[in-house]
Image 1 (cartoon, rainbow, N blue to C red):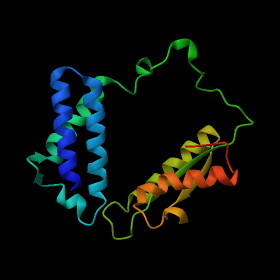
Image 2: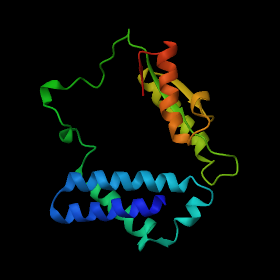
Image 3: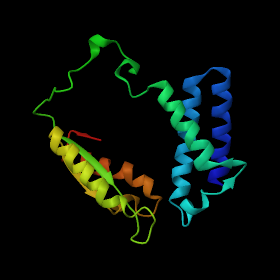
Image 4: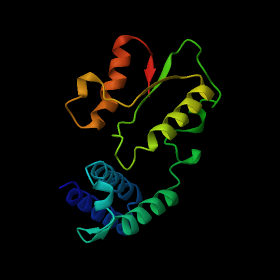
Length: 172
């Protein structure tokens, strides 16, 4: 049961946070979030997550604690990057010879509760790629090599296909 595993990760994260191990707590919360996300993609998954499960109200308890902890850690701040300032590359640096592509797979069935995300996600990726001069590889179907597996495997197979084809030097 994904949410059973998620509850273990969440409780470990809370324990680490209480012990003062903020980064370990964040790692456990991230693992919890991956299970939460996976469960949300199952049939009736989002509806199921609205209820208390394994003694946790996922949208009330977990999401609040997860987002609050991430904000406190300030992991998105430049000062939190794990390398010295003299290693910094200017944000406007571009190697014109480097072919960079962004792969995005958004595989929601037309009747899925999150289907609305397809258009919004594609617009977001298009704007990002245009701003940075990257190629966009957008798909709403899994790559052939991962079609028999969970959709998340498409996020690995797609970039690998692009690299093997020689379309890009770097794929994100």
